[in-house]
Amino acid sequence: MACSLGLGEKFTDGALLEQLALVAKDAAALHGVIMRTKEDPNSSEVVNYAPFTLFPTPIPKPVFEQARLVQKDFNLLVDMVSRDSTFLEQALASTIIVDNFTARLFKIYRHVLQEGASSPINLGLNRSDYMLHCGENGITSLKQIEINTIAASFGGLASQLPAVHRHILKVAGIHDVHVMENTTVAVLAHGIEKAWSIYGSDRAVVMFLVEETQMNIFDQRLLEHELWNQNVPVIRRKFEDVTEKGYLDGEKRLFLDGHEVAVVYYRYGYMPQQYTEKNWEARLMMERSRAVKCPDIAGHLAGTKKVQQELSRPGILERFFPDNPDAVSRIRSTFAGLYSLDQGDEGDRALAMALRDPDMFVLKPQREGGGNNIYGENICHVLNEVKDSPERSVYILMDKITPLPINNCILRRGSPLKLQTCLSELGIFGVYVRHGTEMVLNECAGHLLRTKSSEFADGGVAAGVAALDNPYFT
Image (cartoon, rainbow, N blue to C red; front, side, top):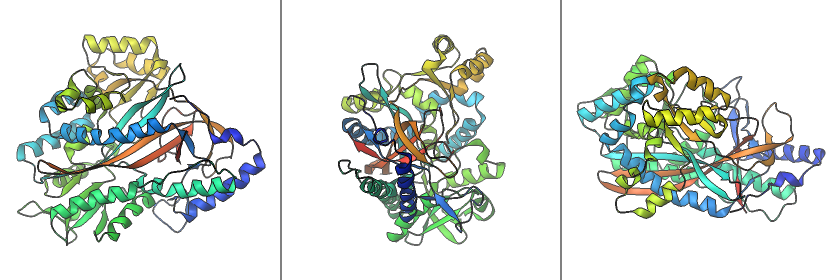
Protein backbone atom coordinates (compact mmCIF):
# COMPACT_ATOMS: atom_id res chain seq x y z
CA MET A 1 0.00 0.00 0.00
CA ALA A 2 1.51 3.36 -1.03
CA CYS A 3 2.31 6.02 1.58
CA SER A 4 0.14 9.15 1.68
CA LEU A 5 0.04 12.70 3.06
CA GLY A 6 -2.08 14.15 5.87
CA LEU A 7 -4.72 16.87 6.25
CA GLY A 8 -2.21 19.31 7.72
CA GLU A 9 -0.84 19.84 4.21
CA LYS A 10 -4.07 21.71 3.36
CA PHE A 11 -3.79 24.34 6.10
CA THR A 12 -1.22 27.14 5.92
CA ASP A 13 -3.34 29.97 7.36
CA GLY A 14 -2.10 30.49 10.93
CA ALA A 15 -5.22 32.40 12.01
CA LEU A 16 -7.47 29.57 10.82
CA LEU A 17 -5.36 27.01 12.68
CA GLU A 18 -5.67 29.08 15.87
CA GLN A 19 -9.45 29.23 15.48
CA LEU A 20 -9.68 25.48 14.90
CA ALA A 21 -7.43 24.83 17.89
CA LEU A 22 -9.75 26.79 20.20
CA VAL A 23 -12.74 24.82 18.93
CA ALA A 24 -10.80 21.57 19.33
CA LYS A 25 -9.77 22.22 22.94
CA ASP A 26 -13.34 22.98 23.94
CA ALA A 27 -14.58 19.88 22.12
CA ALA A 28 -12.02 17.77 23.99
CA ALA A 29 -13.33 19.07 27.30
CA LEU A 30 -16.94 18.49 26.23
CA HIS A 31 -16.22 14.86 25.36
CA GLY A 32 -14.02 14.06 28.35
CA VAL A 33 -10.64 13.89 26.61
CA ILE A 34 -9.03 15.35 29.71
CA MET A 35 -6.29 14.78 32.27
CA ARG A 36 -5.41 16.19 35.63
CA THR A 37 -2.61 18.76 35.77
CA LYS A 38 1.03 18.25 36.70
CA GLU A 39 0.64 20.91 39.36
CA ASP A 40 -2.14 19.00 41.14
CA PRO A 41 -2.20 15.43 39.78
CA ASN A 42 -4.46 14.04 42.51
CA SER A 43 -7.22 16.60 42.25
CA SER A 44 -10.01 17.00 39.70
CA GLU A 45 -10.79 20.59 40.74
CA VAL A 46 -8.75 21.87 37.78
CA VAL A 47 -8.24 19.69 34.70
CA ASN A 48 -6.84 20.16 31.23
CA TYR A 49 -7.37 18.62 27.81
CA ALA A 50 -5.17 15.59 27.13
CA PRO A 51 -2.59 16.16 24.37
CA PHE A 52 -4.13 15.39 20.98
CA THR A 53 -3.68 16.21 17.31
CA LEU A 54 -5.70 18.89 15.57
CA PHE A 55 -6.43 16.59 12.63
CA PRO A 56 -6.83 12.82 12.30
CA THR A 57 -4.08 10.93 10.47
CA PRO A 58 -4.36 8.87 7.27
CA ILE A 59 -3.83 5.11 7.59
CA PRO A 60 -4.08 2.67 4.68
CA LYS A 61 -7.21 0.59 5.30
CA PRO A 62 -5.63 -2.79 4.39
CA VAL A 63 -2.85 -2.23 6.92
CA PHE A 64 -5.31 -1.23 9.65
CA GLU A 65 -7.46 -4.28 8.94
CA GLN A 66 -4.35 -6.47 9.02
CA ALA A 67 -3.56 -5.16 12.51
CA ARG A 68 -7.09 -5.88 13.71
CA LEU A 69 -7.15 -9.36 12.20
CA VAL A 70 -3.85 -10.48 13.76
CA GLN A 71 -4.82 -9.27 17.25
CA LYS A 72 -6.76 -12.44 18.05
CA ASP A 73 -3.67 -14.43 17.08
CA PHE A 74 -1.56 -12.34 19.43
CA ASN A 75 -4.10 -12.84 22.23
CA LEU A 76 -3.78 -16.60 21.80
CA LEU A 77 0.00 -16.37 21.58
CA VAL A 78 0.31 -14.39 24.82
CA ASP A 79 -1.96 -16.87 26.57
CA MET A 80 -0.01 -19.88 25.31
CA VAL A 81 3.37 -18.34 26.16
CA SER A 82 2.16 -17.56 29.68
CA ARG A 83 1.26 -21.24 30.15
CA ASP A 84 4.54 -22.62 28.78
CA SER A 85 6.94 -22.62 31.74
CA THR A 86 9.68 -24.36 29.75
CA PHE A 87 9.66 -21.65 27.10
CA LEU A 88 9.61 -18.80 29.64
CA GLU A 89 12.50 -20.38 31.57
CA GLN A 90 14.56 -20.74 28.41
CA ALA A 91 13.65 -17.35 26.94
CA LEU A 92 14.47 -15.37 30.09
CA ALA A 93 17.39 -17.44 31.40
CA SER A 94 20.07 -14.94 30.41
CA THR A 95 17.99 -11.86 31.25
CA ILE A 96 17.18 -12.77 34.86
CA ILE A 97 20.90 -13.13 35.60
CA VAL A 98 21.61 -9.48 34.82
CA ASP A 99 18.27 -7.65 35.12
CA ASN A 100 17.12 -7.46 38.72
CA PHE A 101 13.58 -6.30 37.95
CA THR A 102 12.85 -9.19 35.58
CA ALA A 103 14.51 -11.51 38.09
CA ARG A 104 12.19 -10.35 40.88
CA LEU A 105 9.16 -10.91 38.67
CA PHE A 106 10.49 -14.33 37.75
CA LYS A 107 11.02 -15.22 41.41
CA ILE A 108 7.30 -14.60 42.03
CA TYR A 109 6.48 -16.62 38.90
CA ARG A 110 8.49 -19.61 40.19
CA HIS A 111 6.87 -19.32 43.61
CA VAL A 112 3.37 -19.43 42.12
CA LEU A 113 4.35 -22.21 39.73
CA GLN A 114 5.68 -24.39 42.54
CA GLU A 115 2.72 -23.66 44.79
CA GLY A 116 0.20 -24.23 42.01
CA ALA A 117 -2.03 -21.63 40.37
CA SER A 118 -4.95 -20.65 42.61
CA SER A 119 -7.23 -19.36 39.87
CA PRO A 120 -8.42 -21.24 36.77
CA ILE A 121 -9.42 -17.94 35.14
CA ASN A 122 -7.02 -15.95 32.98
CA LEU A 123 -7.79 -12.42 31.79
CA GLY A 124 -5.68 -10.53 29.28
CA LEU A 125 -6.10 -6.91 28.21
CA ASN A 126 -3.28 -6.46 25.72
CA ARG A 127 -2.20 -3.81 23.25
CA SER A 128 0.01 -4.54 20.29
CA ASP A 129 1.83 -1.44 19.04
CA TYR A 130 2.96 -0.93 15.46
CA MET A 131 4.52 1.57 13.15
CA LEU A 132 3.74 1.68 9.47
CA HIS A 133 7.10 1.18 7.79
CA CYS A 134 7.40 3.07 4.51
CA GLY A 135 9.92 1.26 2.31
CA GLU A 136 12.11 2.71 -0.39
CA ASN A 137 9.51 1.63 -2.95
CA GLY A 138 6.85 3.75 -1.20
CA ILE A 139 4.96 0.69 0.04
CA THR A 140 3.63 0.69 3.60
CA SER A 141 3.93 -2.41 5.76
CA LEU A 142 2.85 -3.11 9.34
CA LYS A 143 5.72 -3.68 11.79
CA GLN A 144 5.29 -4.45 15.46
CA ILE A 145 7.07 -2.31 18.04
CA GLU A 146 6.03 -4.30 21.10
CA ILE A 147 3.11 -5.97 22.81
CA ASN A 148 1.95 -4.57 26.15
CA THR A 149 0.46 -7.13 28.52
CA ILE A 150 0.25 -4.95 31.64
CA ALA A 151 -1.36 -1.54 32.21
CA ALA A 152 -2.06 -0.90 28.52
CA SER A 153 -3.50 2.60 28.79
CA PHE A 154 -5.54 5.21 26.90
CA GLY A 155 -8.30 2.87 25.77
CA GLY A 156 -10.75 5.15 27.59
CA LEU A 157 -9.71 8.49 26.15
CA ALA A 158 -9.17 6.96 22.71
CA SER A 159 -12.83 5.90 22.74
CA GLN A 160 -13.88 9.53 23.26
CA LEU A 161 -11.64 11.19 20.69
CA PRO A 162 -13.52 10.31 17.46
CA ALA A 163 -16.33 12.74 18.34
CA VAL A 164 -13.77 15.50 18.84
CA HIS A 165 -12.14 15.03 15.45
CA ARG A 166 -15.47 14.70 13.68
CA HIS A 167 -16.49 18.10 15.05
CA ILE A 168 -13.18 19.69 14.01
CA LEU A 169 -13.56 18.35 10.47
CA LYS A 170 -17.06 19.81 10.19
CA VAL A 171 -15.90 23.22 11.38
CA ALA A 172 -12.94 23.06 8.99
CA GLY A 173 -15.27 22.25 6.08
CA ILE A 174 -13.77 18.81 5.46
CA HIS A 175 -16.61 16.46 4.52
CA ASP A 176 -14.83 13.60 2.73
CA VAL A 177 -12.94 12.18 5.74
CA HIS A 178 -14.61 9.55 7.92
CA VAL A 179 -13.40 9.00 11.50
CA MET A 180 -14.56 5.58 12.65
CA GLU A 181 -16.01 4.66 16.03
CA ASN A 182 -13.66 3.30 18.68
CA THR A 183 -15.24 0.70 20.96
CA THR A 184 -12.15 -0.03 23.08
CA VAL A 185 -13.53 0.86 26.50
CA ALA A 186 -16.73 -1.14 26.02
CA VAL A 187 -14.93 -4.30 24.88
CA LEU A 188 -12.27 -4.08 27.61
CA ALA A 189 -15.04 -3.72 30.19
CA HIS A 190 -16.80 -6.74 28.69
CA GLY A 191 -13.64 -8.80 29.21
CA ILE A 192 -13.31 -7.77 32.84
CA GLU A 193 -17.03 -8.38 33.43
CA LYS A 194 -16.73 -11.85 31.91
CA ALA A 195 -13.85 -12.79 34.22
CA TRP A 196 -15.68 -11.29 37.23
CA SER A 197 -18.82 -13.23 36.35
CA ILE A 198 -16.96 -16.54 36.05
CA TYR A 199 -15.35 -15.90 39.44
CA GLY A 200 -18.88 -16.33 40.74
CA SER A 201 -19.53 -13.89 43.58
CA ASP A 202 -21.87 -10.93 43.09
CA ARG A 203 -20.46 -9.32 46.23
CA ALA A 204 -16.83 -9.50 45.06
CA VAL A 205 -15.20 -6.44 43.47
CA VAL A 206 -12.82 -5.53 40.68
CA MET A 207 -9.78 -3.77 42.15
CA PHE A 208 -7.86 -1.26 40.04
CA LEU A 209 -4.27 -1.33 41.37
CA VAL A 210 -3.20 2.29 40.82
CA GLU A 211 -0.32 4.63 41.53
CA GLU A 212 -0.07 7.51 43.97
CA THR A 213 0.08 10.17 41.23
CA GLN A 214 -3.00 9.84 39.04
CA MET A 215 -2.88 12.40 36.22
CA ASN A 216 -4.47 9.98 33.78
CA ILE A 217 -7.36 9.03 36.05
CA PHE A 218 -10.11 9.86 33.53
CA ASP A 219 -8.83 7.23 31.13
CA GLN A 220 -9.33 4.74 33.96
CA ARG A 221 -12.62 6.26 35.13
CA LEU A 222 -14.20 5.68 31.71
CA LEU A 223 -13.49 1.96 32.05
CA GLU A 224 -14.53 2.00 35.69
CA HIS A 225 -17.86 3.65 34.88
CA GLU A 226 -18.51 1.16 32.08
CA LEU A 227 -18.09 -1.63 34.64
CA TRP A 228 -20.41 0.06 37.13
CA ASN A 229 -22.97 0.38 34.32
CA GLN A 230 -22.80 -3.42 34.03
CA ASN A 231 -23.33 -3.72 37.80
CA VAL A 232 -19.72 -4.73 38.41
CA PRO A 233 -18.45 -3.03 41.62
CA VAL A 234 -15.04 -1.38 41.40
CA ILE A 235 -12.59 -0.16 44.04
CA ARG A 236 -9.30 1.66 43.54
CA ARG A 237 -6.35 0.81 45.78
CA LYS A 238 -2.57 1.25 45.88
CA PHE A 239 0.16 -1.25 46.72
CA GLU A 240 0.36 0.27 50.21
CA ASP A 241 -3.33 -0.47 50.80
CA VAL A 242 -2.81 -4.11 49.87
CA THR A 243 0.23 -4.35 52.16
CA GLU A 244 -1.50 -2.77 55.15
CA LYS A 245 -5.03 -4.18 54.85
CA GLY A 246 -5.01 -7.09 52.42
CA TYR A 247 -5.02 -10.76 53.40
CA LEU A 248 -5.79 -14.22 52.07
CA ASP A 249 -8.26 -16.49 53.83
CA GLY A 250 -7.89 -20.26 54.10
CA GLU A 251 -9.17 -20.70 50.54
CA LYS A 252 -6.76 -18.05 49.22
CA ARG A 253 -9.53 -15.58 48.56
CA LEU A 254 -8.16 -12.03 48.59
CA PHE A 255 -9.83 -9.56 50.96
CA LEU A 256 -9.23 -5.84 51.36
CA ASP A 257 -11.21 -3.35 53.47
CA GLY A 258 -13.99 -5.90 53.86
CA HIS A 259 -14.21 -6.55 50.10
CA GLU A 260 -13.57 -9.89 48.46
CA VAL A 261 -11.51 -9.16 45.35
CA ALA A 262 -12.57 -11.09 42.23
CA VAL A 263 -10.27 -9.32 39.74
CA VAL A 264 -7.00 -7.43 40.24
CA TYR A 265 -6.53 -5.07 37.29
CA TYR A 266 -2.97 -3.72 37.27
CA ARG A 267 -2.62 -0.12 36.13
CA TYR A 268 0.68 0.06 38.01
CA GLY A 269 3.60 -2.18 38.81
CA TYR A 270 5.35 -2.35 35.44
CA MET A 271 8.55 -0.41 36.28
CA PRO A 272 11.26 -1.07 38.90
CA GLN A 273 10.83 2.29 40.62
CA GLN A 274 7.22 1.38 41.38
CA TYR A 275 8.30 -1.31 43.85
CA THR A 276 9.43 -1.18 47.44
CA GLU A 277 10.05 -4.39 49.37
CA LYS A 278 6.55 -4.05 50.79
CA ASN A 279 5.17 -3.68 47.27
CA TRP A 280 6.92 -6.88 46.21
CA GLU A 281 5.27 -8.63 49.15
CA ALA A 282 1.89 -7.27 48.08
CA ARG A 283 2.44 -8.42 44.49
CA LEU A 284 3.28 -11.93 45.70
CA MET A 285 0.17 -12.06 47.88
CA MET A 286 -2.07 -11.00 44.99
CA GLU A 287 -0.44 -13.50 42.64
CA ARG A 288 -0.96 -16.33 45.16
CA SER A 289 -4.62 -15.44 45.60
CA ARG A 290 -7.72 -16.90 43.93
CA ALA A 291 -8.45 -13.50 42.40
CA VAL A 292 -8.19 -13.19 38.63
CA LYS A 293 -5.08 -11.17 37.82
CA CYS A 294 -4.91 -8.90 34.76
CA PRO A 295 -2.30 -9.89 33.92
CA ASP A 296 -1.06 -12.69 36.12
CA ILE A 297 2.69 -12.84 36.65
CA ALA A 298 3.16 -15.22 33.71
CA GLY A 299 1.25 -12.87 31.41
CA HIS A 300 3.41 -9.99 32.61
CA LEU A 301 6.58 -11.93 31.71
CA ALA A 302 5.11 -12.92 28.35
CA GLY A 303 5.16 -9.24 27.37
CA THR A 304 8.87 -8.66 28.01
CA LYS A 305 11.15 -7.52 25.18
CA LYS A 306 13.30 -10.64 25.48
CA VAL A 307 10.28 -12.89 24.96
CA GLN A 308 9.29 -10.78 21.94
CA GLN A 309 12.75 -11.35 20.46
CA GLU A 310 12.73 -15.08 21.19
CA LEU A 311 9.32 -15.47 19.53
CA SER A 312 10.83 -14.18 16.28
CA ARG A 313 13.25 -17.11 16.05
CA PRO A 314 12.59 -19.66 13.27
CA GLY A 315 10.27 -22.42 14.40
CA ILE A 316 9.09 -20.82 17.64
CA LEU A 317 5.70 -19.64 16.40
CA GLU A 318 5.16 -23.09 14.89
CA ARG A 319 5.69 -24.52 18.37
CA PHE A 320 2.67 -22.58 19.62
CA PHE A 321 0.56 -22.91 16.44
CA PRO A 322 1.48 -26.39 15.11
CA ASP A 323 -1.77 -26.75 13.20
CA ASN A 324 -2.38 -23.14 12.21
CA PRO A 325 0.11 -21.97 9.56
CA ASP A 326 -2.14 -19.01 8.70
CA ALA A 327 -1.80 -17.62 12.23
CA VAL A 328 1.97 -18.12 12.06
CA SER A 329 2.08 -16.23 8.77
CA ARG A 330 -0.12 -13.38 10.04
CA ILE A 331 2.00 -12.89 13.16
CA ARG A 332 5.39 -13.27 11.47
CA SER A 333 4.52 -10.75 8.78
CA THR A 334 4.39 -8.04 11.47
CA PHE A 335 7.83 -8.77 12.92
CA ALA A 336 10.68 -6.37 12.35
CA GLY A 337 14.18 -7.80 12.61
CA LEU A 338 14.85 -8.77 16.25
CA TYR A 339 18.26 -9.86 17.52
CA SER A 340 19.63 -11.37 20.71
CA LEU A 341 22.64 -9.71 22.34
CA ASP A 342 23.40 -12.66 24.63
CA GLN A 343 27.08 -13.61 24.82
CA GLY A 344 28.07 -16.03 22.06
CA ASP A 345 28.47 -16.02 18.30
CA GLU A 346 24.91 -14.94 17.55
CA GLY A 347 25.01 -12.05 20.00
CA ASP A 348 28.47 -11.02 18.82
CA ARG A 349 27.23 -10.75 15.25
CA ALA A 350 24.29 -8.61 16.31
CA LEU A 351 26.51 -6.40 18.45
CA ALA A 352 28.97 -5.86 15.58
CA MET A 353 26.09 -5.07 13.24
CA ALA A 354 24.75 -2.41 15.64
CA LEU A 355 28.16 -0.82 16.21
CA ARG A 356 28.80 -0.72 12.47
CA ASP A 357 25.54 1.05 11.57
CA PRO A 358 23.71 2.23 14.73
CA ASP A 359 21.21 4.42 12.86
CA MET A 360 19.63 1.27 11.42
CA PHE A 361 18.65 -0.12 14.83
CA VAL A 362 16.93 0.49 18.17
CA LEU A 363 18.42 -0.82 21.42
CA LYS A 364 15.65 -1.89 23.82
CA PRO A 365 15.97 -2.67 27.54
CA GLN A 366 13.48 -4.82 29.46
CA ARG A 367 11.35 -1.84 30.47
CA GLU A 368 7.83 -0.53 29.94
CA GLY A 369 6.37 2.94 30.17
CA GLY A 370 8.01 4.72 27.21
CA GLY A 371 11.19 6.75 26.90
CA ASN A 372 13.55 3.81 27.54
CA ASN A 373 14.83 2.97 24.05
CA ILE A 374 18.27 3.95 22.81
CA TYR A 375 19.09 5.32 19.35
CA GLY A 376 21.95 6.39 17.09
CA GLU A 377 25.39 7.00 18.55
CA ASN A 378 24.03 6.36 22.03
CA ILE A 379 23.73 2.71 20.97
CA CYS A 380 27.49 2.64 20.41
CA HIS A 381 28.14 4.27 23.77
CA VAL A 382 26.00 1.74 25.65
CA LEU A 383 27.17 -1.34 23.77
CA ASN A 384 30.83 -0.45 24.04
CA GLU A 385 30.39 -0.32 27.80
CA VAL A 386 28.78 -3.77 28.06
CA LYS A 387 30.09 -5.65 25.01
CA ASP A 388 32.41 -7.88 27.06
CA SER A 389 29.92 -8.34 29.91
CA PRO A 390 26.84 -10.50 30.49
CA GLU A 391 25.11 -7.15 31.16
CA ARG A 392 24.46 -6.86 27.46
CA SER A 393 21.66 -9.44 27.88
CA VAL A 394 19.65 -6.66 29.49
CA TYR A 395 18.99 -5.43 25.93
CA ILE A 396 17.64 -6.70 22.65
CA LEU A 397 18.29 -5.15 19.24
CA MET A 398 15.55 -4.33 16.72
CA ASP A 399 15.60 -3.00 13.17
CA LYS A 400 14.65 0.67 13.11
CA ILE A 401 11.29 1.26 11.46
CA THR A 402 10.90 4.17 9.06
CA PRO A 403 7.35 5.59 9.15
CA LEU A 404 6.13 8.21 6.70
CA PRO A 405 6.18 11.74 8.21
CA ILE A 406 2.85 13.58 8.23
CA ASN A 407 2.24 17.28 8.84
CA ASN A 408 -0.09 17.96 11.77
CA CYS A 409 -0.55 20.20 14.79
CA ILE A 410 -0.17 18.78 18.28
CA LEU A 411 -2.29 20.50 20.92
CA ARG A 412 -0.58 20.40 24.30
CA ARG A 413 -0.94 22.79 27.21
CA GLY A 414 1.84 25.36 27.19
CA SER A 415 3.12 24.49 23.71
CA PRO A 416 2.89 26.88 20.74
CA LEU A 417 0.55 25.95 17.92
CA LYS A 418 2.42 25.05 14.75
CA LEU A 419 2.33 22.68 11.84
CA GLN A 420 5.11 20.18 12.38
CA THR A 421 6.44 16.95 10.97
CA CYS A 422 4.91 14.06 12.90
CA LEU A 423 5.20 10.29 13.18
CA SER A 424 2.43 7.96 14.32
CA GLU A 425 2.19 4.65 16.17
CA LEU A 426 -0.87 2.42 15.93
CA GLY A 427 -1.96 0.30 18.89
CA ILE A 428 -4.59 -2.44 18.70
CA PHE A 429 -6.24 -3.57 21.93
CA GLY A 430 -7.16 -7.18 22.51
CA VAL A 431 -9.03 -8.97 25.27
CA TYR A 432 -9.19 -12.64 26.11
CA VAL A 433 -10.63 -14.72 28.95
CA ARG A 434 -9.71 -18.35 29.48
CA HIS A 435 -11.49 -20.57 32.00
CA GLY A 436 -9.47 -23.71 32.57
CA THR A 437 -8.67 -24.99 29.10
CA GLU A 438 -11.57 -23.20 27.39
CA MET A 439 -11.04 -19.84 25.69
CA VAL A 440 -14.39 -18.21 26.43
CA LEU A 441 -13.57 -14.79 24.94
CA ASN A 442 -11.05 -13.66 22.33
CA GLU A 443 -11.70 -10.28 20.75
CA CYS A 444 -10.03 -7.33 19.09
CA ALA A 445 -11.14 -4.48 21.35
CA GLY A 446 -10.33 -1.29 19.46
CA HIS A 447 -7.44 0.98 18.59
CA LEU A 448 -5.15 3.74 19.81
CA LEU A 449 -3.27 6.08 17.51
CA ARG A 450 -0.50 8.18 19.06
CA THR A 451 1.36 10.86 17.16
CA LYS A 452 4.50 12.76 18.09
CA SER A 453 6.83 15.30 16.59
CA SER A 454 9.57 13.69 14.50
CA GLU A 455 12.16 15.47 16.68
CA PHE A 456 11.46 12.94 19.45
CA ALA A 457 12.83 9.41 19.06
CA ASP A 458 10.82 7.82 21.87
CA GLY A 459 8.11 8.40 24.46
CA GLY A 460 4.35 8.12 24.84
CA VAL A 461 1.44 10.35 25.85
CA ALA A 462 1.95 9.83 29.59
CA ALA A 463 5.64 10.64 29.14
CA GLY A 464 4.70 14.05 27.70
CA VAL A 465 5.90 13.39 24.15
CA ALA A 466 3.11 11.85 22.07
CA ALA A 467 -0.48 12.96 21.56
CA LEU A 468 -3.75 11.10 21.07
CA ASP A 469 -4.91 10.81 17.48
CA ASN A 470 -7.50 9.10 15.26
CA PRO A 471 -6.96 7.22 12.03
CA TYR A 472 -8.92 7.70 8.85
CA PHE A 473 -8.65 5.43 5.85
CA THR A 474 -6.86 6.16 2.59
